[in-house]
Length: 216
Length: 228
Image (cartoon, rainbow over all chains, first blue to last red; front, side):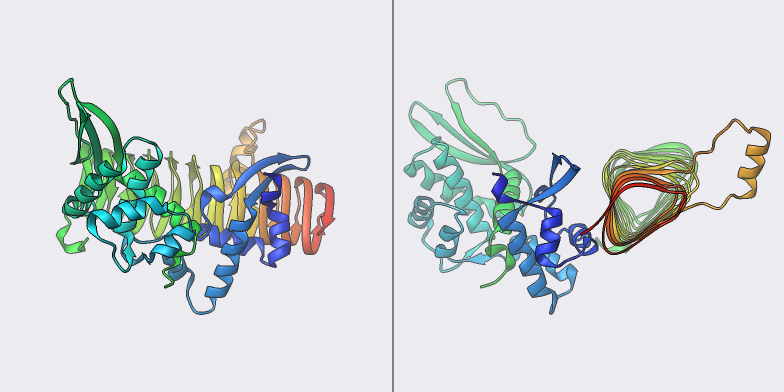
């Protein structure tokens, strides 16, 4: 773990940027808050960064700085749901989702040429539930169809995805959150996913990789 | 989000209101806003409390005010006593009173003629501080950092002359200060790191790391100096 971190001092020396630049980029949210890792060392508190992530991010900022303002850069680095596009290979290479999830998605609603943010989100939710072992692949198709048909009606508002099972029959539903729902006692809530939280997690994943930059 | 569709909110005397979107929000007297506030211009005189976060273009906060969430804006001027339980982010912050921020405070320019307590990081491109009352920040970082002892003015001289025992402390305390150009007076700091570092009078500093230049006033104590 130690090798994966770089101290602030070493980082500035290695990249040739100044304290001021680093603080400015932090202020502009070009560098995510949770990359700043504080640790006690024998010289007092020092700040460390995840080495690979911060080095590639600084390279990108330096590259792009020439033809974009810092505010434009900030937009690139925080992926807006609207302007993320990716293809299957990229999603798999970046390990955003697993191939199994993409295949189930393709079987359920067809494979699109390019995945926009909403589609990536559906696959991400599916992937999450598959990996946790809560649902199987057939149930996954139900889930994807539900999301694909009905999620757009929420117009980006916060909602919960609830997956229930009773006597071996499974179904799922979307409800706007926060809302209270009660089921009959025979039904079991298999999983409840908050879509907003999923979006946050997915954005985090995307912004760490290449796709978040809006590059095709 | 169209400005014209928003109404104004004015509380004069004693009153409370729910949060929401407004154009101009003014609190005179004692006013409470329960919930998040999204407005174009915020003015608080007297005793104002926002139980939630505030998003605004400009804010002028005087008297005794409290915000229990974050404050986001372009131009923010503080007078009197202000307590913010969250973080501030703005383009320009001017503090002329006593400001307390529990989390981070980020701005392109930050100027203070008064005192402040910042629980997190004070991060600004240009930091211009004149210390008139005890000031404290966990960390300070930015491009151009200038911290000076406030000039003794008439009122302070008057108070000290009738109450000689009363110490109106004029120090700034921080764990770390990091910047490209740093000038400090009356500061107690663990570590100062920067390109050009100049230590004026009355400082107590454990360690200085500098890249280009370093100057120190004779009245200041710096335990360790290192060129990196």
